[in-house]
Image 1 (cartoon, helix red, strand yellow):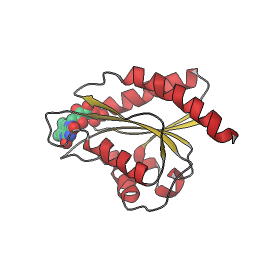
Image 2 (cartoon, helix red, strand yellow; image 1 turned 30 degrees about the vertical axis):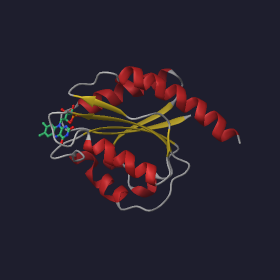
Image 3 (cartoon, helix red, strand yellow; image 1 turned 135 degrees about the vertical axis):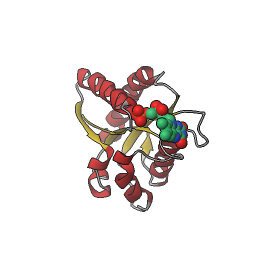
Amino acid sequence: MILDILYATQTGNAETVAKKLQLLAKNQGFNVNLVEMNYHNINTFRQLRNVAIVTSTYGNGEVPDMGIDFWEELKSSKVEMTNLRYGLIALGDKSHEIFCGAGKAISKKLDELKCTKVIQNLECDGDTEGTYEWSIKFLEKLKIKAYYNDKV
Ligand SMILES: Cc1cc2nc3c(=O)[nH]c(=O)nc-3n(C[C@H](O)[C@H](O)[C@H](O)COP(=O)(O)O)c2cc1C
């Protein structure tokens, strides 16, 4: 099964989390593509089936630079993506007014476009705690969902 991991980071935390998820997924036999978020545009993105997004938040609740072009396109998209399953890790810090704003905004938009949320988003406050456990659960749920959805 192919898993596409998209990450957006400013100082490296989201990249580290994304790479750990990549390793776990590879060990479980997934075929993994790990890319910076801006690698995709809306047309390439909507062709994906199994997606993990790992993003931090910068500025005032904004997506980091390496994801901003993708986000601008996604934000204005109206194309439904019912075949796309996703899980999302948002890194942020509660000392900022708009906690995990980037992750929350991306997830809200994906839900509007009718993507399937495989697992509840993980929101990290000031560190990356919980990302390992989330990653294990995400891969488990993804396999089950993909098995049943692709069978019918
Ligand atoms: C200048 C700056 C702005 C930030 N703005 C926000 C914010 O608006 N909301 C939030 O939840 N966290 C914010 N953060 C916290 C980062 O998202 C958090 O430290 C995260 O772990 C960084 O991950 P990264 O290394 O992948 O970029 C900000 C951090 C900095 C340094």
